[in-house]
Image (cartoon, rainbow, N blue to C red):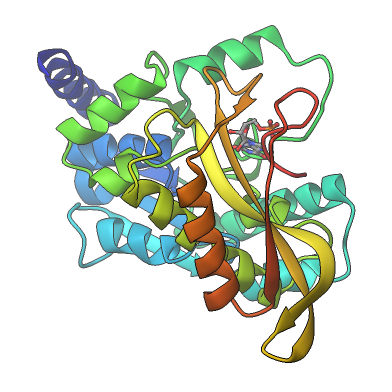
Length: 319
Ligand code: XMP
C-alpha cells in the first residue's frame, strides 16, 4: 500500500531527526499498537531503543514467547529487548482477591512497579514511546464521565519513569492503518492481526480469585476456541472472541465417576467501536467441536457455555 509505505518512510525520517542519538524506552505489550510503534522506532534509532516487555503471567497461551520470538535476540529487529518474567509477583499479589476493580488495580499497580524497576536499571532516557492511536487521543480528550472499569494502560506510566518527552508515532492513525503499517514493516500476521486484549489480561477473564491453575485452564480453553474458530473461518466478522473461566463449578459425569469441575464461558462479539457490541451467532458445529475438545483436553472443566449477551447490558470482558 503506497499510503502506508510513505507513512513509514516519513515517520522513520522524522523520528531520526527528532531523536538524533538520544535514547528511547518503550513498554511493549505485544499488542499491535505498541509493536508497530516499537518497530518504527527500531528502524529509526536501532539499539538506542530499549523495549521492556512485562510478562505478568496473564497473557494468552504462548503469547509471551511469541513476543520474544519477534523482538528478542533471535528476532527480526535491531532493538534492546528485556522480557521480565513477573508472573510469580502478580500471582502473589492477586492471591485471595476476588473483587474485580481491586484485581484491576493490583495488576495495574504491579505493572507500573515492575516497569519502573526496569526503567531505573536503564537510567534516564530522552524519550518514552507510547503506542497511542487516534481513537485513544479522542477518547481521553472527551474525558470519560463514569469509570465503569479502570483501564490501566491508558495514561499510566509517564509519572513513574525518568524521561524528557513522550513520542507517539501512531497518534494520527486508526486501527486498520496501524495494522497496514505493521504489515508494511514486516511484522508477522499473528501480531498484526491480534484482537484487542485488555491490559489486565486473563486476570479479568477469570471470575473471582486468580490462581496459576485457573490461568492454565483458561489459557488452554481459549487456545482451543481460537484455533477452532479460525480453522472454520468463522472469525471474519468478529470484533473479539475468547474463553473466560466462570467461578462456577458444577456436577458432571465421566466414565462411571462423578465430577465437580469448572464451567468455561465462550464469548464472541461483533462490534464497530467496542462501546456497544452484539453477541455473534457462531456456527453450531464450531461451538460443539470447541466444547468437545475443551472438556476432553482441559483438565478441571466439565461444562462449556456460550454467552449470548450483548453490550449493554453486559460488557465485553467479564470483569
Ligand atoms: P468492556 O469489557 O468494557 O471492554 O466492554 C471494551 C473493550 O476494552 C477492552 N478492555 C481493556 N483494554 N485495558 C485495555 O487496554 C483494560 O483494562 C481493558 N478492559 C477492557 C476490552 O477487551 C474490549 O476490547
